[in-house]
Length: 320
Length: 284
Image (cartoon, rainbow over all chains, first blue to last red; front, side, top):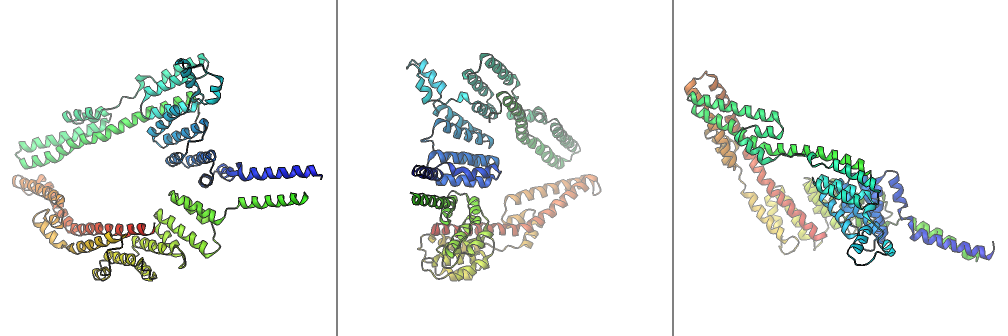
C-alpha cells in the first residue's frame, strides 16, 4: 500500500467514525423494535433518544415515532400528551405540520374533538401556506408574487388530503355538518385538481351533506311536557313505544285502583296506593325521559356520523 | 503512517464499542428522568433489565424499584424492594419510612412497628419515628400507648408539627365515639318504627322508615276494620306491613354498627393522610 492509499483510508476512517458517532444511528434500535411489533419497548427507546438528543429535529422525530408506538398500543391520549412536548422553534414547516397533524389525529382517535380542531386551526394559521400567501400578495396589491416565495413558503395544506379529511371528520363528530361541508368545498376549490374533477367532487359532497338528511334529534323539554299532560306520551315521542305503553298502563291501573278504593270508602288505602304507585311512576317516568332522550339522540348521531365517516373516507381516500 | 493507521483503527473500534454500550450511571440518569416524568412502568422495565455489580449499585436499583412501585400503588412489591436497601445506603431512611407507610396502608401494622423500632437512632428523624409509631397506636385504638408516645412530641419539627396536633384531636374524637347498644336500637324501633335508627345517628333513614311502616300499618288497619281479618286486602297489606316492620327492626340493629364503622373509617382516613404527607415533606 502506498502513501496516498493509506492517507485516503485514514480520512475514510475519520469520516466513518464521525458519522456513526454523531449521525443517524440514533434510531436504529428503536426502529427495529418498532418493526418487530414491540411497541412498548420501542416507545421507551424513542423516549431515550428524546432524553439524550440536543438537536431539535432529532428530538421531534423521536416524539413522532413514540406517538406511532402509542397509537399502536391504542393509548391515544398519552400519544397526544407526548406530542404536546414538541418545541416548534427551529423546526421547518413540514415538520411542524407533521407534529400538529399527528397531535390532532391522536386527539381525534382519543375522542377529544375540540383539541383536535384546535390543532388543525393552528396548522392553518401558523404555517405560512404557499397558496394562501400567494393569493394575499396578489389580491391585496402588496406586491407581485416572486419565484423565491415558493422556496420560502413551500408548504401548503391544500397539497395534503389528510388535513381536510381529518378536519371534516372532527367537525362531523361535533355535529357541525354545515361547517364541514363548507371547509371541504373551500379546500376543493383551492386544490390543483382539473375543473371536471373539482365539479364531480363538489357534486358528491353536496349529496353526502344534504341538510334534509341530518338526524332529527329529540327535545328533552318537549318530551317532558308531553309526559306531564299525557303520561307515556313522552316515551312514545322519543321512540320507545313499549316503555311508554308500560308506563301509562301502570299509571292507569293505579288510578283505577285509587278510584275504586275511594268509591268503596277505603280512603287511607286510596291515598297510599295513589301516592306510592301513581306518584312514583308519574314522576319517575318524567325523570327517566332524560336517559331515554340522551340514548335516542346518541343512537341517531352515531348512526349518521358513522355513515358520513364512511362516505367521506371513500371520497377523499385513506389519507390518514 | 502505518502506525497512525493502526492507532486510528483501534481508536475507532474502542469508541464504537463504548458508544454502543450504555453505562450503569447513564441508565440510572435515564430512569430518574422517567420517574420525574411519572413514567413509572417504563422505569420499572429499564430497572428490571439492569444488573448492579456492587452494593451501591444494587441499593440504587432496589431503591428506585421500590419508589417506582410505590408510585403505581403496588405497595407489596414496593416494600419488598425497599427492604433490600442495605443499612449503609444513602437511601436507607427514605426506604425504611416508606416501607413503614406501605405496611401500615396494607394493614401490616406489626411489621411497620417492628421496622420503626429497628431504625437506628437519628436525632433529626426521631420526632418522625415517634409520630409514625403514635399513628399506628391510634389506628389500633391503643390509647394508653398513644398517650405514652405523644408525651415526647415537641410540636416544633415543622414537617409534622401540625399533624402532631391533629393526632391529639383524633385521639379525643376517637374516645368520644360511643358504643351504642344494637339491642336498644332494635327495641326502640319495635315500639316506634325508625326511632332505633335515630338513636344510631341517622335522621333521614329514621323518617323514611317511620313513614313506610306507619302508612302500611294504617292501610292494614283500615282493611282489617272494613274487610275483616280474612279479607284478601287485609292479608296482603298485613303481610307487607309485617315485612317492613321486621326489616325496620333488623335495619336498626345493624345501623348501630354501620354508623360506628363509618365514624371510625373517617378518622382512620385522616390518620392515614396525616401519616403520609409528612414523608413527602421530609424526604422529597
